[in-house]
Image 1 (cartoon, rainbow, N blue to C red):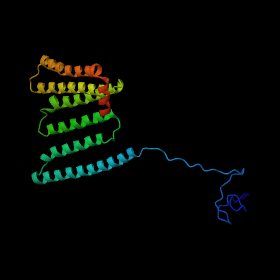
Image 2 (cartoon, rainbow, N blue to C red; image 1 turned 45 degrees about the horizontal axis):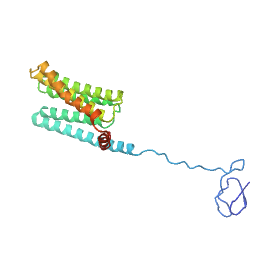
Image 3 (cartoon, helix red, strand yellow; image 1 turned 120 degrees about the vertical axis):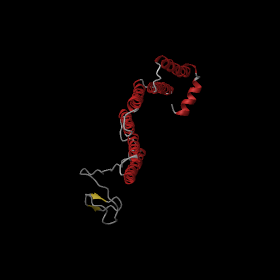
Image 4 (cartoon, rainbow, N blue to C red; image 1 turned 90 degrees about the vertical axis):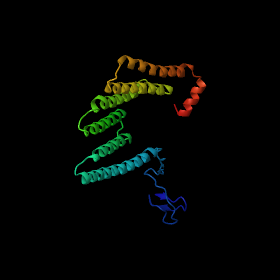
Length: 239
């Protein structure tokens, strides 16, 4: 039997509240000990990522619907005016390629390497289609394909080196400038080759001359810049 803590009358086990004074009688187990209910603290989860994910999903759905309407409308207008698809091929392909770029940059693909490869393939499809619509592949194979492929490869290598070497701080910027110079020279090589103006020796000299200032700046930042200035810049740009 149990007793009411307020008025003291005897009550049945788990008879809550007290039939006399309506006082809430605590639950007791078989041994007569009061069962204490432990209130758990709420989980300390950060709601911001899930909130941003919902916002991005809504934006992406809106953009997808807008792209569908725009592509359908341009194709319809083009066909009604010309009884065939002419200018709408270029515009629709560009719009769809932009949609693909948004898809890869909105976080639906988690792997960084897959994102880079996906964006590279998206650009290749766009440029291939634009060149093909002209009736022949004049500039895609000698110019667009190596440039886009080289850009994708340099981006993948840059990310791999940064991760493998655990590059931090100013070194990230230094490696980025080196990758940018290499990419610029890669693009310059194929542009000159496309224009039949390639001079390998001249191209090599120009490459070295462009890399040299970057290397000198990196050496100065690494060994010559005062530590106090480094810390200020690092705090300013969160390096």
